[in-house]
Amino acid sequence: MLSLLYSALLSLTLASGVYSDGKNISVSTQVFASTGSNVTLPCRLNGDSDIMPFGTIGIRVKWSRMPEDETLEEEPFLVVLGLHTKSFGEFNGRAVMQGADVNDASLVIMDAVASDSGRYRCEVDKGMEDVVYEVSLQVEEAGLLNGVVFPYSPRLGRYNLNFHDAEQACVDQDAVVASFDQLFQAWRGGFDWCNAGWLIDGTVQYPVTKPREPCGGSGSNAGVRTYGQRDKSNSRYDVFCFVSQLEGVFFWLEQPERLTFDEAVQACADNGAEIAKVGHMYAAWKLHGYDRCDAGWLADSSVRYPISRPRKNCSPTQAAVRFLGFPDKKQKLYGVYCFKPQ
Ligand SMILES: *[C@@H]1O[C@H](CO)[C@@H](O)[C@H](O)[C@H]1NC(C)=O
Ligand SMILES: *[C@@H]1O[C@H](CO)[C@@H](O)[C@H](O)[C@H]1NC(C)=O
Image (cartoon, rainbow, N blue to C red):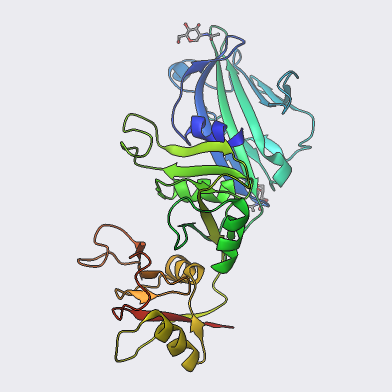
C-alpha cells in the first residue's frame, strides 16, 4: 500500500489532481529524513503571490496531518492567518512555519522522530481558490539507509528463490534482505534493475529509473514497481539484499596464475583469509570506492569485479559491480577476491 503510494507520488514530481472533496492538489512531494534532524516539508505560494504575499490579510495556510484511517477528518496543527499563527496538537512547538520569504509556507519539524512519518497537507486558501500541497514524510533511524542495496540471484538462475531462500541467500552474502525504504533510497540514487526481488516485508518489487520496453514499457513512469505481497513459500523471485558496512578487509589476491574455483577458495585460505562474498564486494565498492578491473571468483562461485571509476574496457558508462555470471567452476580464467574478517 505504502509502496503503491510512493510509486504514484514518484518523488518530487509535480502532479495535478483533484481531491474527492473538490480541492486541487497542485504538488505531491516525498521527503526523507533521519531521526533527530530538522526536516522541511515544502509548501510555496506562487503565481499571483506578488499581489497577495503570504503574511498579508486574506491568505490562510493550514498544515494538517492525514490520519491513517481515511474515514477520519484530518486535524490541523498549525494555522497561519495573515500575521497570526496558531499551533496546537501533537507537535508541541516542534513544528514551525519556515517563512524564509513572503512565499514560503513550508513547515519545519524539528528533531524528527520515526512517528512523524506520514502524509501531510498544506492548504493554502487565497479566497478565490484553495490549493492543497501534499507531502509524504518518511523518517528513518539515522544510519538505517546508509549502505548499499544489491540484487541477487543464485547459481540456479533467475527467479528461483522463495522468501525463505531469499533470506538465506542474503545471509550467505553477509547481508540482509533490504527494506522498501532502502530500495526506494537506492532508486532515488539511480538504481535501476529489471528483475523483481523480495523485500523484507514480503513484497516483491523492482526499481526502474529508465523506463523501457522489457521493464514495464517505455511509456510508463519511473518508480519502484511492486507486485505486492507474494506467497512466501510458493512464489519465486530474486532478492534485494542490503549491506551497511564492511567488517574486515576486502582485497584482490595477487598471484601468478588464473585459478579454478576450488583453487581460488584454497588460495584465500593459504593467505589467512577467506574467499569474499558478494556482500563484501558491494560494500567495498560502494562504501569504500574499491575499484579493480580484474574478474575474480567469489564465494557463491560467481565471477565479478567492482568498478567505481568507469573507463574504457572497465564498465565504461557507469560505476558498477560487473557480473560475469556463474562460469564452469573448472575454468581457469579468473583471479580471486578475498576477505579477512576483523
Ligand atoms: C534544528 O533547529 C533548531 C532551531 O533552529 C536548532 O537549534 C537545532 O540546532 C537544529 N537541529 C539540527 C540537527 O540542525
Ligand atoms: C481547481 O483548479 C481549477 C483550475 O485551475 C479551478 O478552476 C478551480 O476553481 C480549482 N478548485 C478549487 C476548489 O480551488
